[in-house]
Length: 178
Image (tube, rainbow, N blue to C red):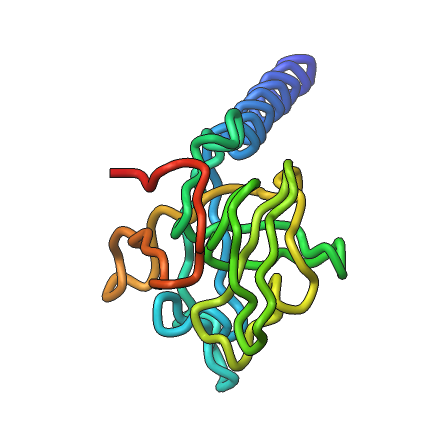
């Protein structure tokens, strides 16, 4: 009996140690997220409404090392961030402008400067995207990570390219990543 309890205790300790290592890796280095909604189509694909549609949704790898220094984020990156309107919701959008940049607001004649400590994000599918056009610049502190790869489904496996739509940013403080 004592041997059984000792083995069970050893198992529990190893599971707990593995959980601590796993949480640390997920929190500090990278994690995965599932794409929902059509705001980033055609770049990213959500699952459909049919049964098991979630199996067709893009599973994304998030680089969290970039969070250590916000200068690692550049215009055109696809980012995941906490919604400024609904704190329990995570959103995936393209980073259009960084602090100090002057940006044109789509559908208006408005030009605004992104405040210090903020960024401007928009979905690739503008007609259905809830983004900075609706809620304004977001604090950099809401960023969870940069989307670097689609890792599921296998047919879509690959890098998520960083690109900036032309004419969106009028004046930039820093250059694009080479």
